[in-house]
Length: 214
Length: 244
Ligand code: SF4
Ligand code: FES
Image (cartoon, rainbow over all chains, first blue to last red; front, top):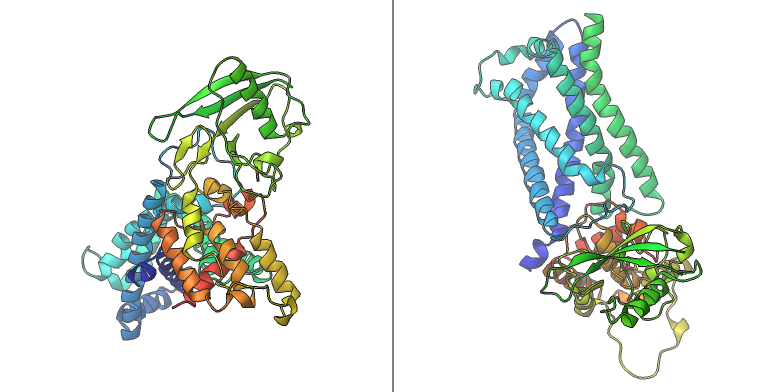
């Protein structure tokens, strides 16, 4: 029974569920971030305050952190295991056609993780009181960060890589959950593409707008 | 045609192998890839050298014995063909061809281009069958099957167990193979009674044999000489989840 519960497919099932949860969270985060475009800092700060204090949201927050942890840890474990399965490598690079970006998930995922750590230092740890700053004024912290060109470039690069990650992840999660057939798979792939372009683009235009308009 | 061949030579499972270079002249574009290797072997034998070992049997794309990694592609650069059906007309005169065995930990090299694929047999033995009572075959039309389902079952049953999917996969995953072996029964009423036991047993064995985890890259589908579809893997996953 243990072998069945902890089979490779079960691990992937967990990966897929965790990934889908993160896919649901991103648009929520984007929705709040778009309030940065307003001149008035109140709505954004209120939303951030709400996210930080409301009980239900706090429960979801713990779930979210656990999800990230599981997704990252399982992703790394599975990838490292797979790397060891070809002890002698091919002399000629494997040219077999694959779904776009699927071969680079560990790398695009790694880049997103690095950004996430930076992001935690900038915001989340401040909220927890681990780093100095005023957690009630995330609006001005975001504006400060967006005024640093180096930060914005890093931000953009990470979001492009996130887009690559998302494109494969959405369709892959459905496939892993067994939700794929000749009719729906092309539709899901289309949705993956729209999602993978729209969400990172939404995040990426915010510093651009701030620069242009303010 | 004249060819410059770079071929993996390895005495046995224990020794370390290396590439050897051969120049081969007089290759006809009408030859199959294996016939080309035959002509090289003839030359090697005449020179008193050890011929290149490679697996083959039917030479008509139905047994799954043949298979090698040719210029970066399992079964060569032409989709939908086994190595035995790959014709030399797809190659250019003077071309350099690199030939390697399947590379995957569960498929250790036995000699030169031959790998041990008994890991696949073990997965099959674990559950890739239906139990039937011996005796006269029952009347075929007594169990009705939808045409679409029977076609799909057939399309997965044509997997020849060649291992190109594992060879192509960056994770050395056997999911396409196992999904074909599961689907051929899962889609038919005769396969349903033992469906749960089958999928559990085959998945446990697949893990035991040390194959990797699928990350849905699709390299297997692209390289499968029988065009086994990726949707079979989704079906395998469904079968697995519903086996609890
Ligand atoms: S799924 Fe295709 S590539 Fe894999 S063993 Fe079967 S026929 Fe060969
Ligand atoms: S020799 Fe039988 S499939 Fe190639």
